[in-house]
Image (cartoon, rainbow, N blue to C red):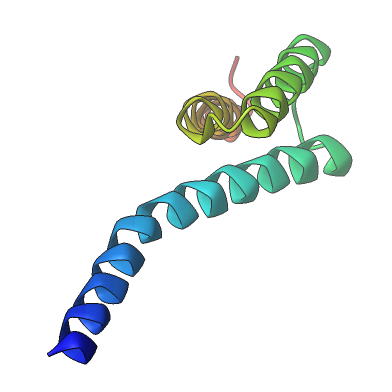
Length: 95
């Protein structure tokens, strides 16, 4: 009986902890994507590059403080903005 209860507690703890690891992984993955975007010199303007660097700093601070939710919010928005900018630039050059 004790073994079953202990196993149940262990499984419950593992299931409850998994979203925390998933959030940390997403935060880290998004930070890496931003780092790659900045390093590649992708087709982003200087203003957007500056905003991306500021977002990276804020997200890293949130991550260091343990606020992975804030990190994910910041980085996801920044990545979406870069993706939308890239999609807008690939319209055949008509501006």
